Image (cartoon, rainbow, N blue to C red; front, side):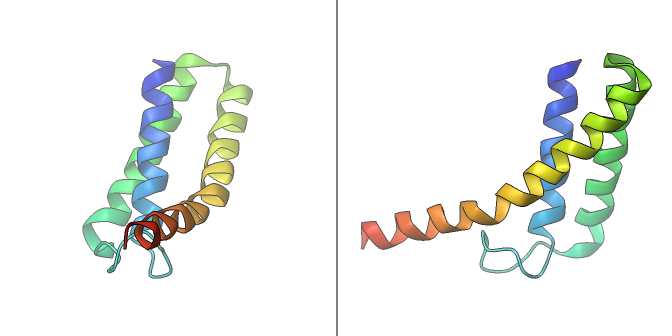
Length: 89
């Protein structure tokens, strides 16, 4: 159940990031209408999963901390993608 929690929260953060207009991974961001609500729904599902895995205080702390870390790291992956494309040409 813990693995499901991590997968849900990472997928939710990725969907929310990729649907934002300032994302750097894709040439065009994902359309906001179907993907942002799905990302929010996945975040809520991850919270429900966290409540089944951990105590209430730990679940909320982890549920808030992991997205903070992921949203801080995701923009830097675009630098690695751009570096790989420049090295191939």
